[in-house]
Length: 170
Image (tube, rainbow, N blue to C red):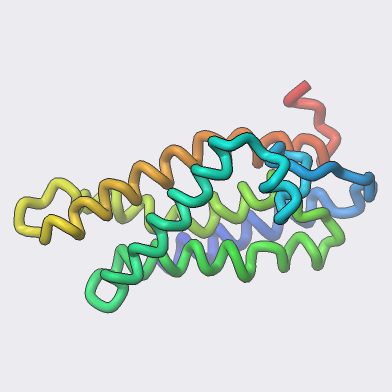
């Protein structure tokens, strides 16, 4: 089931990027908007709450390292963040698409969904037999991914709409 999901997600990511290839190479600003570069300058140009959120999000994912040797869900969460950080840009670069915040959102949706699926279906945060630390971390991780996806879904849609030229978000 998990392998089918990963192959399906990779296919969707590549197909989406392929459909968007050939888009114009406009100059984009720095910031956290869907059509802005979200690099060090983009983070610095973002509101304070976004900068704090990044710290909280990365800290929550990093805490998964405590559980990664014993808990598959922690491996999926940590693996998802590492994949999005280190491999997310590759399909966009290969198709000559800018890796803007909207592209980062697509990488998050693809790479973090397996962990979210496991967190929501197995609900370790509700299991009385689990260690308290693990329960707290899985609850926090579920909240972090869900909160991030609220913004990632919007940013991914804006990015795809912009480069596909469909005009659905206008």
